[in-house]
Length: 577
Image (tube, rainbow, N blue to C red; front, side, top):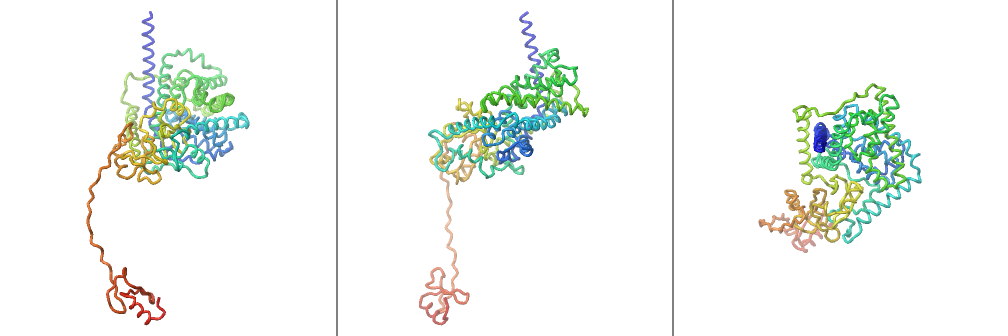
């Protein structure tokens, strides 16, 4: 009996994993397309001066916050960290929350995966319900979050940021003169924090007309995919297991149906509750949404569930740490309400337009991969992904990577100018997408430091990784960025050697190449012939460079072999100079 039960469970788990695998295969091309589009948007769209333009929660600021969120990464953790950074720099609390909503719910990769896995109505609903949810948040924000509460939360976040800056700038490896940070040549974190409030523009966006720009876009795409791989894996596995293991009767009891508006209301409020306890956020909750839709939740309930990735349990813990328990509870209540109501209103809009989709059940149609349009698209986009990988791998050679770093914990690409967190280890500054990644790094830095940290030279100088010579970053002959680290070179030849094999010169323990004297061919050229002039008094040829005297008369120049000739010239031409 026990053996039979175990065998049944193993078979069911295997079926669930296969269901999740085929669900992933159905959406693979869409994931690649979504990440590539997101990478291009992040690389080519400038987000400079964001903080100064979110000073209130008026319509213009809310619209700007939504736009900035749409061109940011879809990772919920990165969005929460960037939101905290905005708040500490003086951005309006409500507008900062709008930014966070838009970064996770109005991004292109989410819509593409919803299109493939759920249908076009769900993709359209994302861009209809998202603005509804943001409008509700903007209306409720000033009432729900009082000025006193916001000020307490802001001071708490600022104190945490100040403590983090202290950890970065303190220690024996503090930067020397010139305000440069170790071998990386980046501004110190204190300067970075001050610079964010300056009136000058930040680093410009990459240009889509250059190979460097596309290499930066590819790096963003690969970094985001790497960062979200665990979320995606959990989402597909859990969705597959739910589709196979959970009986239909459970879903029927959980999602009330047959009572008109009241069923829709119950489903819209149950959806976010499932998101809270699911521990899955970002794009990983779309496969779960497909499983819930198959199980019987309403259209509005699915939309509310997808919107509610920002109130999953791990993020609530982060909010509590950033802003305190009181503000976290208020955020949970406000977010829950606006997400559920937005889902309900979106369902109402689609019902009024007779566009509510028919319910579908996602099942594995084949026991093997068949050569249909999905397979062809997957293969084609895997080739595109390989091209993006090549661009990201060779971005230093293509001139990209300047001003960017790779988070050593989650592998997300961040701009060093506005990275949410930073930490120093062994004389090197590392940049992070969030405080969570920085804390993991600080707990065990050696685990995440996989490349050699070039020891900083005196006065903030850098060390050429090829020949070992000390180089001033301000006057270095060349600069490269490889896997998030900056390198400066004493001569173009060293930069070319680095480009040929960057992994060799950046790996731990790599030695320097000795400087080999190069043969130099010298040729002795005859001196150029000098033009001679004639002394106007005696007729002797004179070299102007060694003439004894010189005069100018009526705009003409005259040179003399001796001062006596010059004196005779002066006597005959009175008034000459």
